[in-house]
Amino acid sequence: MTRVDPALYFHAHMKDIPIPDSPFPLLVDLHTDALYEHMRGRKDITQRSDKGHLDLPRMKEGGVNGQVFAVWVSPTELKPGEYCDFALRGADVFDQVCAGCPDAVTPVRTPAGFRQATAAGRIAAVLGVEGGHALEGRLENLDRFYEHGVRVLTLTWCNSNELGDSSSDESQPHKGLSPLGRKAVRRMNELGVIVDVSHSADMTVFDILDTSLSPVIASHSGIRARRDFNRNLTDDEIKAIGTHGGVIGVVFLPYFLREPEDKASVEDVLDCIDHICQLVGPDHAALGSDFDGFEGVLAGLEDVTKMGVISSGLRRRGYPERDIAKIEGLNFLRVWDAVANRAA
Ligand SMILES: [Zn+2]
Image (cartoon, rainbow, N blue to C red):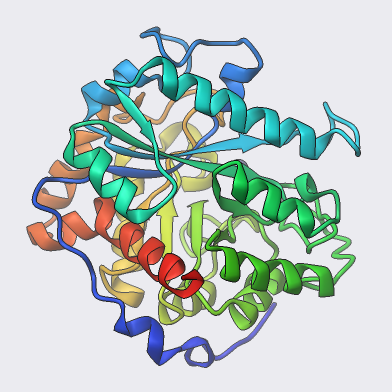
């Protein structure tokens, strides 16, 4: 069990980034694997269907106007040497999808672009890569990703890689972040790529917070105090991410929310948001569905068309409108502002 003092991760300069305002509601989701499903030909995300949880027409219906689309790089279906190319192909597919639906979605590479796209009534689509093995151990590939529009990198998936240890790997070969992983985090700070700690082992999370000069996200994570599972975040991690200025996107994956998982519902997502807000306040909670990254459905949040139940549920629980707006998008935008400002 890792013991830390979360106050160690307080950086005064990160508190200087104000929480932005938006003249219209934002509804931002920090993680979906829908692009991967599209790449594999299992669905066409430009067309409405009942396959999986998400496509562009259903996002419109659900009111989602900001989305991080992750290119998941399978470490088993692909072989080393193919990972980086697959991620870059994902970037091309992302651009093609967006170019084919210009009235619905805009690929955005900056917070300003995000604001413009959402103001124009389109979905602001942010490109991510899930799994640091996609770098193939070469920092130059970070720059290539950046040039191709990648603005979020999930440092590990369920496999440990050259950068650091995964929460799903008991062998913990690096005991946290590797020296290359530390360099990668600093390079991401320089470039303006958001560091995503979801999937990382506990020691990796604390090493990332120790290294990163910019706030980080946990794009799709659960709460370990509510569901004891090493993929979920401990209270110490939540406090440390919060004092470091970051945000935690609460996952909708039933197995991560409660046991038995068939009893999980949207109320568990709201409970996780409550838990984060009670620990570190409303500036550090966000949404991270993992839609199309899991089988089955969460009761009450069966697909992206149901996203409105989050704000109505928070309202029912007494959250002020300003806090709901933070959780549903402004917190993420604040982190991206901070990451982009530091890079600039
Ligand atoms: Zn994931």
